[in-house]
Structure formats: structure tokens, C-alpha cells
Image (cartoon, rainbow over all chains, first blue to last red; front, side):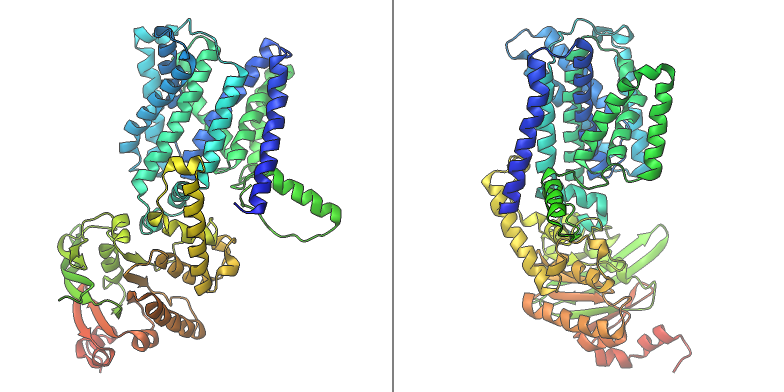
Amino acid sequence: MNAANRKSWIINLAALAALTAALLIPARLNMFNDYIKGVITWTLVNVIMAVSLNLVCGLLGYLALGHAGFMAVGAYASAMVSLNWKVPLSFPLALLAGGLAAAAAGMVIGIPVLRLKGDYLAIITLGFGEIVRIILNNIPALGGARSLRGIPRITTIPAAYLAVVICVALMFTLGRSRHGRAILSIREDEVAATSSGIPVMYYKMLAFTIAAFFAGIAGGLYAHNAGTLNPNRFNFDRSIEYLVMVVLGGMGSITGAVIAAAVLTALPEMLRWLSDYRMLIYSLALILMMLFRPDGLLGTAEFSIARMLERVRRARTGARSSRADRGNDG
Amino acid sequence: MADTLLEIKDLCVQFGGLSALERVSFAVSPGEIVGLIGPNGAGKTTVFNLITGIYPPTSGSVTLNGRTISGKKTHLIFQSGVARTFQNIRLFKKLSVLDNVRIAAHSQMRYGPLTGALRLPGYWRDESETTARAMDMLGIFDLAGYAEATASSLPYGAQRRLEIARALISRPRLLLLDEPAAGMNPTETRALMSTIREVRDRFGVAILLIEHDMRLVMGICERLVVLDYGQVIAAGAPDEIRRDERVVKAYLGGSAV
């Protein structure tokens, strides 16, 4: 670890601490009403969904349209654990079970699906999402279309926040390891990747399974926040919503996905005073965004506080060297 | 033969009803520079794709140091010591020059996903060692100054050199170059010729290259294999090939000379 690297670690840790304090202290002091709490939790859940989908769509470069399906698997699996097992620490266990169930589904789906590319893969993942929804609708033991009720509402903001931090941190460290580079190389050129010694199928499966795992965790958090689960909450529209977040944030940018997920979850809420017009404004915002920033908010770059501070410092000292130092560790 | 590195025996491949290669056989010794030439559509790149396992042969075999590699997966063939470049440059365009090389060092790195995710000491050790190795390799190809640049931003000639650097980071025993001089001017081609010779001398790697530039082929290849319509029509030293009647016919047409 060199000096610049260490400095950016310290800055990032400080920023993380500040964000944590800003979020958790008011939560601790009960300064949020239920509505705000709900929006914050939902935002955190969506951040995990967007960041995990970004691994498949942005980093691996595979257009997957069934991410809500993995969320559903995780949500129901963790809800069933909570409902049937009354043991200490059951909440983390339930989340883990949700994640593992979704990861298992990801693996099973991944084996046939990841041999395909582009439109074919998109359509099969779309089909998978719908199949999950329809199966769940038809299992009476899981509540079916009449919803699964009575799930303990124990998702707290700190718990969801912790999950977000773990997920985002893992995505970052994974992305900057040999495994992350292998995944990126598949996005860039699959033939060159396999000709450079990358076991392509293994890394596709790895990316797909990790993404499904975190979608399952997000599903578990959602289930224990809502208290009831209805299969139709995990429909095709939901998968598209997550895809929109990834595209808007910039395919391949983890920080972009975080920001886009937060904005796109909060925006409709903030526009509530416009009543009927709010979805119109929301759609308009998306269209304008794609017209003027087709690469998304951040493109493939990552937002970096260290780099921003550096830019401010340079601007102040008046040294106008416009060195393009993008895409570095930050 | 003990001193055969690559041996191709009776290699056939059919795409649908089309027979792309018919009983192709030739061998490459360790440290040798061999040229694979022939008119367009003769099946030269197909030979590369069969050696590297992009597609499986219909029949016949490819052996490396006596071990059969045909039928194996491409990344395993790479790991057993065969690296290549592509006719129409295939870099990881949006990634940095350094990452392009580090990706090809993937199979020589040891740390697992968890070690990487948790940034355990194994990660730092392996990464810094690989980065140093990759920087050395970039230095050899005059690319060290571009290390942080995006691969697609490099000038054409530098992209070709980067592809060779990427192929060599794994210390292969056989390097396959698919039209390395395509699109280069005579000065660049001359520089490339000395680079290829240097690569062979420095890394002791055998080189099999496909090329249309006859000055390059005749200048650096120690042996030539000529393909036409999927068959080997001649093989031997450049001087013999230059005088071979069938080769001249294949290149210039039936009634010429």
C-alpha cells in the first residue's frame, strides 16, 4: 500500500464515519418518523439491489432482467426462517439463509443461462423472474397470491445500513482484485479473456452467484421491513427499476449505482406533492438524463472523495494542470 | 522427436459441410520462428483457433511437449504455455494498459476470492509482485509510460505491442502471432521484426506467426509452412519456399510464371 493509497483509505474511512453518524445518530435518537424510516430502509435495500445488479450488468457486461426474482427467493426464504425458527440471532441467520437461497437459485439458473449472450440471456433471466413470481403465487404454504403475513418487522436502519456497507465494501475490494479484473475482462472481450487464461465460465458463475446472494440479502431486509410479502411485488417492473438504477448510475460504477439507487428511491417520495404528475416528472428526469449523460451519472468511473479534495486543493493553489487521473484506486 | 515443442498431426476441421482444414501436419521446435503463410482464406487463423482451443478439431491432434492439448479448454491451453495475439487486435479496450497485462497474469496468481475481498497479506504480496512484473514487461515494449492509460487510447502500433506484452507475461513456450504487421508502415514493420527476434532471444519462446508481409516473413522466419485451401502445400526454409512451384502457383494463379 503506497502513501497515496493509504491517504485515500483514511479519507474514505472518515467519510464513511461521517455518513454513518449522520444516519445512525438521528435514528438512535428517534428523530425520524415512521414514514422517513420506511423511506430510508427502502433506499438502503435498493442500494444493495442496484450495487449487486451492477456486478452482472456493469462489470460482467451481461444484461440480466430477473434481479427481482432473486430478491423474491431471498425474501421468502428468510421470512420462512424467521417464521419457523425462534432462535437467538435468528435475524442475521434469516438474512444469511435468504442470501444463500438466492445464491443457490443463481447457480442453478446460471449454468444454462450463462452460456448465452445479449438478448438471449436477457429474455431467459426475464423468464426466470416471472417464473419465480408465478410459482410463489401458487404455493399456499407461502401465502400464495394472498400474501405471506406476520413476518417480524425487525429490519432496523442500522442493520440495513450495515448490510449496505458490507455489500459495497466487498464489491469494491472484489472489483480491484484479480477476480474482479477477470470479470471485467469478460465484459471487454470474452475470446481475449479465455485466450489470456481466464476460466470464463467460472467467473461468470461467480459474478452471477454473488449478485444473487446480495439480492437475497436485500430481499430478506425487505421482508422483515414490510412484514408481509406478496409475490407481485417482485414483478418484471421491479427488475427494470433496478436496471434503470444501474444504467443511470453508469454501468460498472459502484458509487454510481449507490447514488442512482438513493436518488431514484427518494425522488418519487420527494415529488409526492405533485401528486399525479410525479411519475411524469420522474420519467422526464430519466429521459433527460439519458439524452444528456448517456453513460450515466459517473460512466464507468468511481466517485472519489480523495480525488475531489485533490481537485479542490489544486484549484486553490492555482496549479491548472489538467492531468486526467481517473479510474484510480480511490 | 524429443526436441519438438508443438506437433500438429492430421488436423481436420469441418464447418457444416465445408472442410476448412484437411490433414494439416507440421511441427515447431523450441525457440524456433516459423511462418504460416498462404493466400486469404487458406485456413491460417483456423489453425491458430484450433491450437488454442477456440474450436475443437473434427479429427487429428495437437500436442505440446508430447501432451495432447486438442480438445482442452482455451484457458487451460493458455496455462499449459500457448499464448496468442489476434489479427484484429483484441485488447480489453476500456481497461488500463497495466490491467490488460495483469489480467493475463491471472492464472499465475494464487490468492483466493476471500483473501482478495478482505485484503489479507496474500493479496498485497501477490498484487505488488504481479504489478512489478507487468511494469517490467511494459518497459520491454516501451509502454511503461502508458501504464495508466486506457488501452483503446494507444496509437495503433502501441496496441499491437501491448497485445504481445500481454501474451508474454505468462512466460509461454509458444507464442502465436496473427498478422502482427497488419496495418503497419515499412518503418514500423522493420521495428517489429527486431522486436520479434528480441522476444525470442530474451524469452526463449518459440514463435509461430501468420503474415502477409513477405519481407517480414522471409526476413525472420527460419522455416515456413504454406497453406492453401486448408492443406499444407509446402514446408521448408524460406529460400526453398520462394522457389517452390506450387507455392508460386497458389499465390499468383495457375498459369503464371
